[in-house]
Length: 311
Ligand code: CP
Image (tube, rainbow, N blue to C red):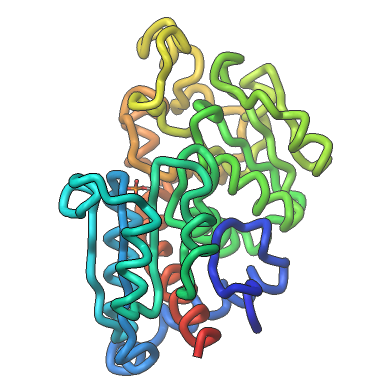
């Protein structure tokens, strides 16, 4: 089953429910396989990670995933590439194409960069996060984590709270969660909301932008506070971190009106004590480490699927 016509994974909007479920099933199988079996799946293939932005979780788990599948992995980051000498993105990826990699995994600060790359080279591309636009593998690992705990996303109340404006995770998660039948609630300070929330509301009635934080939290099955993206704050979006934390920081007190078994998720990295309390990060409702573990299985499943389709 081809997950896309050009065999790249650029965002979740290209995936049907059937595609998403097939990636979840593959991740399940791979999580139970021993290393001797998984090493055979993409043995002899070469995978490049090309990261123009910082990352801990995504880059490391892609590298580990590809190695567990038996592939050879080369990592290039902004600091070590000839971009520093003025080479263009197009010339960089044409150079890398000439080395005949089988798969390129790219993170870039410009929205659309992975699309541009995939249009210009004949190698599958995975979007590992592009600017404020999309982060499809984060969405797939979040879906996997929710399905594992709750069985389904259908009719579940999933609330995404905080710095929506700067969040590619929010954009992809809104598309992915609502596609699987969840009721997605969005709450943020007005200055950190989407300018185009009408786009999501018109596209999908399952997305609810609410002004009141309690409205988002009440009876929620999943609460996902987002990191305040300090590196992307224009001056004056919020008065201070202290004030943000007081009104939007998610803590034990504020989640008392959520469901008893509410899942606390966070894509990471976490500003502990700002958008989420330390107690919730490390408490029994926290799924944060499980999300990271699931990221490995999901990325293995995606790499295996794309490389087997590219044969
Ligand atoms: N969630 C996420 O993308 O984390 P990193 O920036 O550490 O990869």
